[in-house]
Length: 56
View 1 (tube, helix red, strand yellow):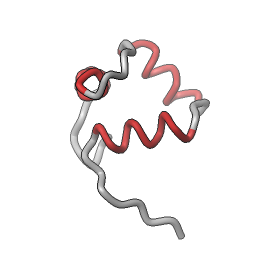
View 2 (cartoon, one colour):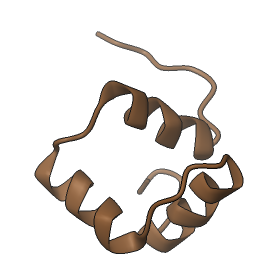
View 3 (cartoon, one colour):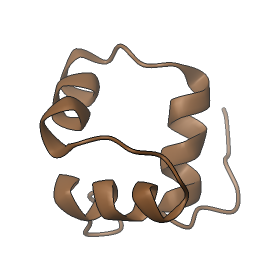
């Protein structure tokens, strides 16, 4: 999110455009706990416009 200069509120809007309904509070909690599914991670990356992922 920081690399794309996107706030939690903006990410919520971007996810909503993809049909994923969530609110800012829940999103903050998921990210701060680090407890979310790989599917949710991919949804967030897609909403942020990421087209590739490099794993080392």
